[in-house]
Image 1 (cartoon, chains in turn cyan, red):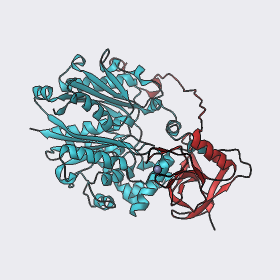
Image 2 (cartoon, rainbow over the protein chains, first blue to last red):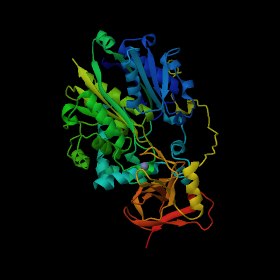
Image 3 (spheres, rainbow over the protein chains, first blue to last red):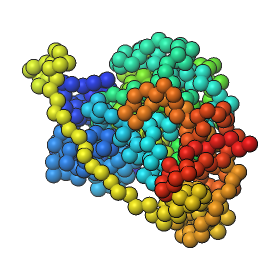
Image 4 (cartoon, rainbow over the protein chains, first blue to last red):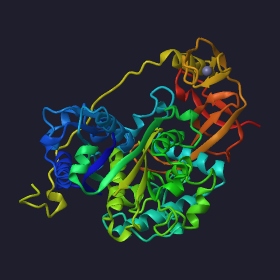
Length: 381
Length: 153
Ligand SMILES: [Zn+2]
């Protein structure tokens, strides 16, 4: 039995959102997604809500849903995972045949939190790392150093990611983080954890996103925009950062699983474009290599040659990625799914690619994790 | 509320202040206890997994590759090599530091894992350089018993 995405809703990412509470933001995204799917909450059989409660200044996130999703007295799973892992969980439920329609939700209200680094520091091992009492951005700085060093890349190489994604976001026109910026200008920004600079980091943003999925029967009844979840996989490498080598092992495994389910032999040939996690600039290149889109050590050159540009052979992050749209924490993956669906439906406005039929989405759980997943979407009909 | 009454000035946005006043006591565990006691004696201790013939750093009571229990701990005497390092310009409150903190991943060639710690801020140290731990004279059994790692001459 196949599973399809039948509805999407977004409360767009933005720097701050003083006009709404985070529950109201989710309500807005849910309302849009249900309208898009042509359903009402009563039609939904099961819900998955993604949340990292400490990062939201809350605890025991079960207490913060399901009212705003219209999900009272329905099955709701609140899980702490990236977008692909969250979708896989819901996908598996539909696959059992016991549920027809499922809803996936994620949100970010990072502007509510005054000191993010203290929250991320809580994710470091309390015995072996955290007693150093240092800003957790060092984890990204260390990993970036490993990544650049092992490939012979430099900071200018990753600055190209920032320039591409900020420019794509400007063209797309939804985000306030879009700008025409040159790679050289990126290098003028302040160092945060050398070699990581301020502009290498996707800026924190608020937002909410809801995705509705359904079994084949429901999707075909709806009749339009048949977007199939053709493959999905997720994995977690060791959380012990002392063992990282800068290669995003989690995505290699996730990609292998997703490609095999979707029957993909050569991702660049068999897929039309990708939404790839770029929470830090180097992550985009690291993820591109882990996904096997180019060989080890070839991503920087391909990027410079325009291979991943809007008009390139294999566009990556055509709407701007997280660098161009903002870092919305666990919602990053859902924003990526949302934007991939826009492309497959032909609704991506200024950044619309020429009739794409399949999309690759790669998500990462964020600092300081080594978890992520891969989704393959395919348009039918 | 947004439907009827729009916020036109940011200062009019109403907020409720909150905080998370939570304190923790983390048990060190078997591996952590060995490690901290070692630091107090001016030593770096690792776990030894006989199934994969590897030293595990920092020490834990299990090997994550073999999924086997470990009860053997060893002195790790080096050579300690800088795998990667970063110069950190932010404190925990995200304020800018004028003098960066040098943080490195340091390992030995025969180990799985390594140690995250400081580098001597006054030395030029690069990836691949061999370093040694500098211990404080007064040690209490904590991660900061190591002052930093510095170049081994
Ligand atoms: Zn072992």
